[in-house]
Image (cartoon, rainbow, N blue to C red):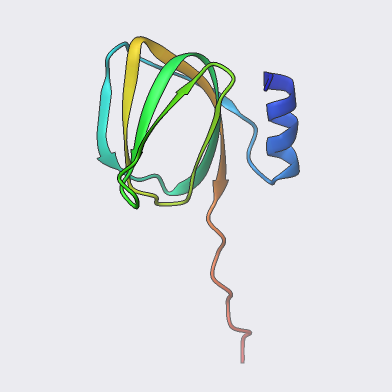
Length: 101
């Protein structure tokens, strides 16, 4: 997928405009979550993501898209050349507010 198509898809799905993220070579971001849903397009390099729900490792390279749910526990490892990606974020749905009495 190319960046223009990806950004159009994000807009159609209600994500915020994509931002460019660069991560260092051979880096690691151990177990963590994000307070938003994320969808990303890899531009260069590679990233390996382990989701805690199934313990599976998945590697993404240029042209691949990954998706993480709101507050989904995961860890990230960056390849020998690091990774550059575009990521769109979408806030979690807000709980319904009861009507005022």
